[in-house]
Amino acid sequence: MKLAELRHQRGLTQKDLAKAAGLSNHTIMNIEKSYYRPTTETISVVAKALGINPWDVDEFRAAVTNTIYQKPKWRKR
Image 1 (cartoon, rainbow, N blue to C red):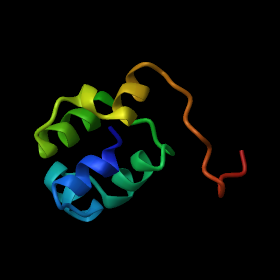
Image 2 (image 1 turned 30 degrees about the vertical axis):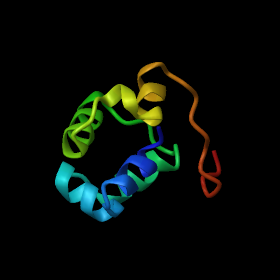
Image 3 (image 1 turned 90 degrees about the vertical axis):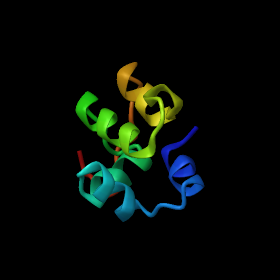
Image 4 (image 1 turned 30 degrees about the horizontal axis):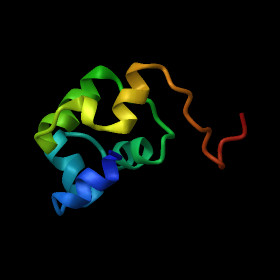
């Protein structure tokens, strides 16, 4: 399941989840848009904040299995 779906199910905004995980809301936004490959530490704190298994999140599985992420449209290189 996508991170945004799990977050919405729990009634959290990106800002709420970021605060609970001790991250910036930009980090959560970038993970949800697949602009950022989260580190294992980031995966751990977000999963803990949501109370879920990290393998339940599509973006986290992709990060661990080295799936290619899309380049943000605003990034030139």
